[in-house]
Amino acid sequence: MQISIITVGKLKEKYLREGIDEYSKRLSAYCKLQVVEVSDEKAPEEMSAAEMEQVKRKEGERILAQIKQDQYVIALAIEGQMWSSEKLSAELDKLALHGRSQVAFVIGGSLGLADAVLKRADAHLSFSKMTFPHQLVRLVLLEQVYRAFRISRGEPYHK
Image: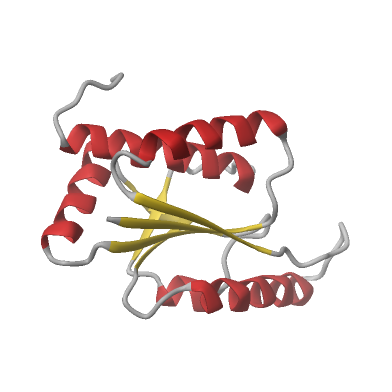
């Protein structure tokens, strides 16, 4: 299975980089992993609603340019469905069984995802109704994908 993580912004914090590196290494036994960082749009602290939409639209264009036509796209969005780890595992198994082995998870920038990206997505996934820094979500996502593969193979994992 080919898993792509398409995300807005560069990862700056060392502690997050170390965690992501660890889970990327662990995932190499289960899938081909690619992390694609698209640049975030520079924006002032105070923005109008129209300016926020413009920032999301520009970031969205960069994201969409990275999505391949045959990829199954799962957008991380606060308004998405909440899945258990077992459900994520089952969904990835189902995709592989149906020949959809190219999966892209999309993580937006600090303002979220553009409507065009949400429309392109095949599924919307939420980790919580809480708001998390998008860079932290990258680490949590990799841990959950790793856990999903372990569940699928009947390997031990922390419950």
